[in-house]
Length: 483
Image 1 (tube, rainbow, N blue to C red):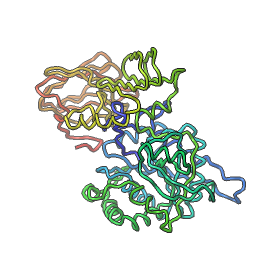
Image 2: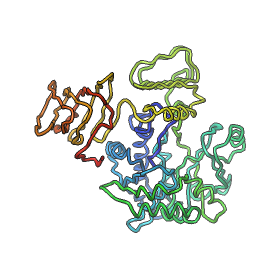
Image 3: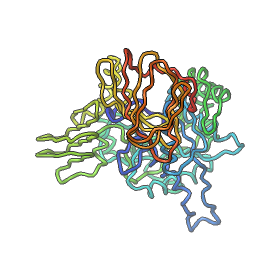
Image 4: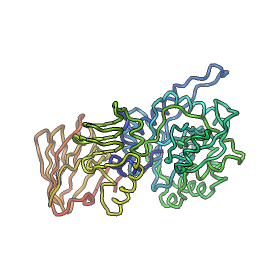
């Protein structure tokens, strides 16, 4: 499930480039790490005690995400050689229960009834081998029709997670415990009591169950979600790996989480539901405090990413994106620097970052939606300077990629090639430009930029005119299906 917006990790995470695509740990994004953890199930060997137990048959993943992020998902998965079997594009966000339903309907299309490993794309796991082992044991139990949950033993009274209460005895297959009940995110006093009592685990939102088990349970507990999601799926369109449910039908699906729609109803209902304790260094990177918790730290508890200098500071996180950041005399603080926005917060208040994002949205500012550097299917552009009637962008076009055939009503453009080779179509003329060469695109002229080479093409674009917004683009042709 890769459709979240990650507002609590602003300003690094934004609607146009949310946290699942960020590299916060190591050199791969959270989405890539999630895909690689699931792919590792192919390497699991049967237990020696299991008689003639077959190795797991692991299919390529089904990804459920946002229509706007479809090329980000494909590009990042292909970077780690993980081609999805389907990329289901939600036309609108409807929480996790409809998302899982779309995936289950896709999974049973070939007449099979596979076990689904359902995981968000934005988790951090310090011990992937232990995580994979727990998934394999959960899959074995789920193959018999049980609903399995991975529960994380809490090490602090955290109010940011829902909890699962499990039996403290009578462990089942693979060490599973029976689930007694689900509880919502508690206040601090209640979370502290859970920790002292024992038997309570964080609900990490990782479920393992057969596709048919989910569809039958949803039909039983939330038939409206089941029926309306089925209508949206039946009216889907497909384009290569992209699966697009009907926007009109999906917009009428009630927005509910997996927990609220089904899981909370399972205990005592006759549906076998169990929990496997997970000890794999799991963390939900839902806020900057969680990022600090998993990050490497110096002797004073400080964690840094980028060019950072600490002096007389303790237990502080600094994430520097584009420049040197120095901090003096800080304790339990988060500082996140990006080219167009800076966040400074008490680390214990980092859950409230979403309130700043809400304020930006109310004020109709763009900083909650896009970065200065904006990713596109063909590459990216970085708006490096702007003023009255001009704007300067640095543009990168991937090898073989092409921008749309387009024109502008209100601006002209000057392009200077700084690396690679550009094929420029302008009106009836097409030319090749190499490093240090330039061209001019008059206002109102049809034009296209393409990279015919095998290395990335970089250009500097200078726009001039009365209006320079991105909505002053009239597309005549586009290989990426944009209107």
